[in-house]
Length: 218
Image 1 (spheres, helix red, strand yellow):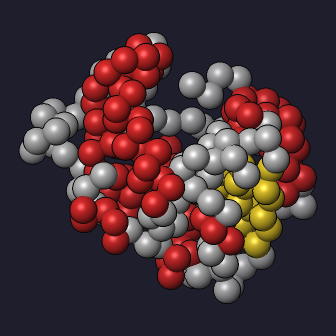
Image 2 (image 1 turned 45 degrees about the horizontal axis):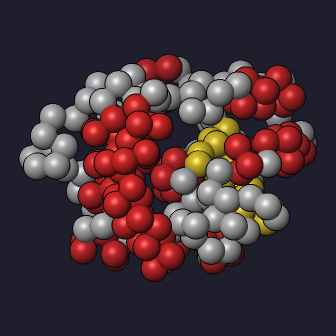
């Protein structure tokens, strides 16, 4: 779904990159009984950030990475950087808390899934039902309404760039304004004519923001 955007970021920044799919997405292993025993718990983002991602980086021999995450991936990057040493953290349309605008949009996505949305997503995921329902179910669960990682974000020491589209249907500007780390440098960018995916809606502008942000860093 990212097409050649990651490769272009690597080229313009002169850095090597690894793109990975979380379990249940892309061509990764499916999650058995995703709407039953395999349903994601409300702390699934913390699990990804503090258990899965560290194990992945260790297995790849990567130390102090630059993390670049979008949406849930942005939340995972923030949570990881709050506890682990990273060179920099870049997030696009992250979630640091649950807003009603997100809940309404996710409910609308659920209603649209059995029609055109499922067909569109099928080309990107080996098991499209797993990819969709593991995300949709947990976000609409009562337990997830308490999701709030703002205090974790305060602990981030690494340079941090947060990018948000002004037309994002899944979050307002508060999602980046309230990251507010108290220990590291922090830059924000608000993009006009941009929804939930800055790398798709404003690819050149977003790529330049990333490149300029990383330029001073070793």
